[in-house]
Length: 305
Image (cartoon, rainbow, N blue to C red; front, side):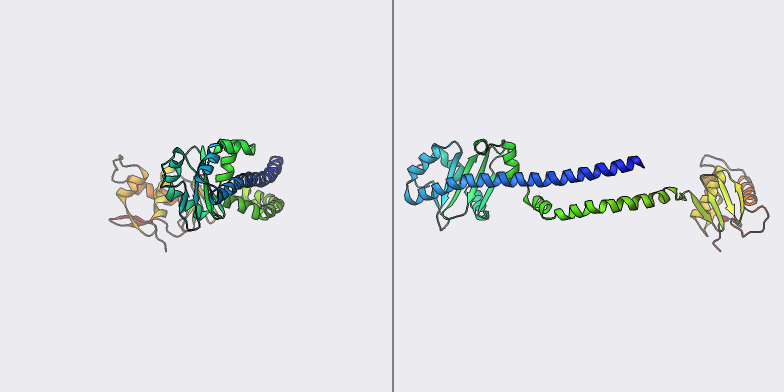
C-alpha cells in the first residue's frame, strides 16, 4: 500500500514536470524561430530595395560581404527570376539558385509569409524564403545564423524544423492534461477501493463442467452434487476429451491416443476397464445421470441430454 501511494505521488510530480517542460520547450523553439525570421527579414528588405533601386553588382557585393548568406534569388511581381540574371555570365554563387529553381518556386509559394527548408542532410545550409513583393530566397549558413542568435546549431535546427502541430496541440489542449491530473486522486481512491476484491477473486480458468459435474484440473478433483473424489492424470485427459467433443462419438483409438499416447499398444480391455473404473469414481452410487455413454461397436460419447 505504501509503495503504491509513493508511486502515485511520483507519477503526479513527473506529469507536472513533463507538462512544464513541454510548454517551455515549445516556447523556446518558437522564440528562436521568431528571432531568426526577424534577423533575416532585415536582409530580405535590403535585397528587395537593391533589386528595385540598385544593380546586380551591388547585390553581389552585399552577398559576398556577408558570411551568413551563401546565395540569393529574387523574383519580380510576375514570378520571373530577376537575380541572378540568367542572361549574364554565371557566377559561382548563382549555381545553388539556378540548379534549384523548381524547389525554390515551390518553397516561396508555400511561404505564409515565410518558409524554411533544409538544403542538405546535415542542415549546414538552409533556404529561407519570403513571398512579399518582390519575393526573395536566401541560402543561409546555419552555423553563422546560430552564432548571430547566440544559440547552438542543433537548437536552431530543432526550432526551425520540428513539427509545429504537436506543439500547438500541447499548448492549446493543456487543459486536458490539467483535467487528467485533477482526476488522478479520484482514480487513486477508486483503485484502492476495487483492487482488493479483484485480487481476491477466485481464478476458475482451470475448472470445466461436464454435465452436472465440476472438474478441477488444478487440484485433480471432481465435484458433483455435494460429492467429490480424486482423479488421476489419465482420468483428467479423458474427461477433457469428452468435454471438448460433446455429443460426439469418440472412437476407442482416439481415446487410447488421448489417455495413453500413440506409442501405446492397447490390449483388448484396457480402455473398457478404465472407463468402468472412471464411471465408479464420478458416480459411485449409480444414481446420477450418465456422463460417459457406450456406443457399441464405435466408442464412447458424452451425451448433452
